[in-house]
Length: 198
Image (cartoon, rainbow, N blue to C red; front, top):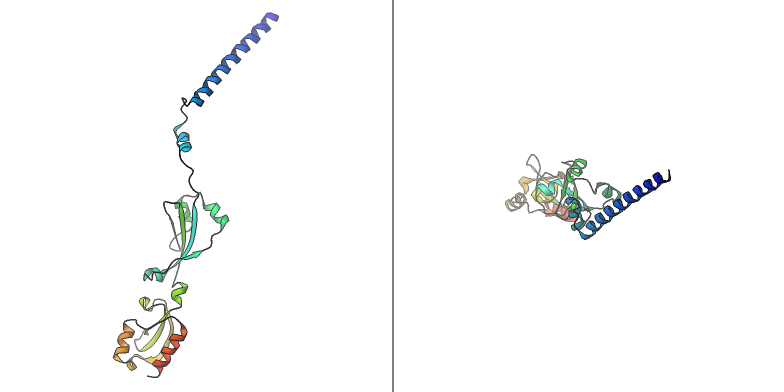
């Protein structure tokens, strides 16, 4: 019985020795760089970690874009919790969460994601400009929102009782050329007062 126990312990010691030698050899190979790790892992170790995405939130206005008024997009504040939730989503999935035509989603090479809300009408800056034109029937002077480039697309602010026939040929030509633009209501009222005296 004692001989069997001794053989059992000897066999266990041999196995332990072989296992230890194998582990020592393997660890030495890894340390010396002879053991090839999977290619993907070694590539990840060699590349620098990518910068996390940044988000820009903007608003653009349909008529300003359509008539190329060169106004800047209106920057909006972002929400940290929302950005964290969106940070790792593929661009296609981001675009699905912010679908067109109400939204435009883009990403540049620096991992800056721009999420732009597309609004109807004019931006606040151009909404505060007025210009003169003729009303729908072509009989009266009308006041329209926005610069003269947009014509009547932004809607009428006021249709006056000044007949186009009462304008001089020079005034009529200037009106047709879009030269009557006003950047404040005071300027506009002053001009309308002058026209009403015709």
